[in-house]
Length: 166
Image 1: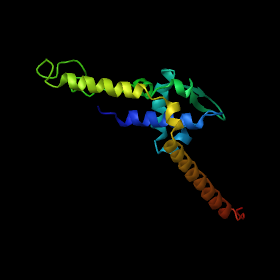
Image 2: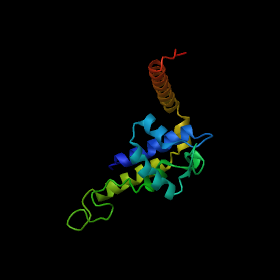
Image 3: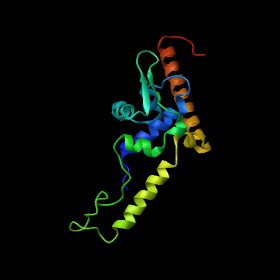
Image 4: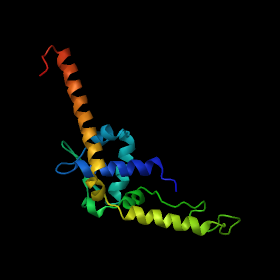
């Protein structure tokens, strides 16, 4: 299995959305800053996620994205499938033509592994990930870093304008 950057970023962004879209839509720029994913890349991913019914968008001031369903109803495999990734570890894409048009010696082994991976990711939803203490700790660290950056930015602007920072 080769989960590409696209798949990893989509899952990361959806988890970020599940963590932060509790009341208001979340702008992609915020996800971009927190997760270090380019905004243009997120726009491409969220276009696909929206078409697949995993997220809803809100335009205008205060706009952004929110989950289209409860986080407990969105499995990790749903996110991966929505962006046209797959969890197949065979060389032949599961077609069984891996060696001269026929199945190779280990074809069934890799098919079984692909099914195990798919089932594993289908058994984990965003709500379960949100509940993990380690993920909550990382999210808090990201929030703290974002707040420090905002405070530093405010201090620079205040200094440039000759205003005493609080």
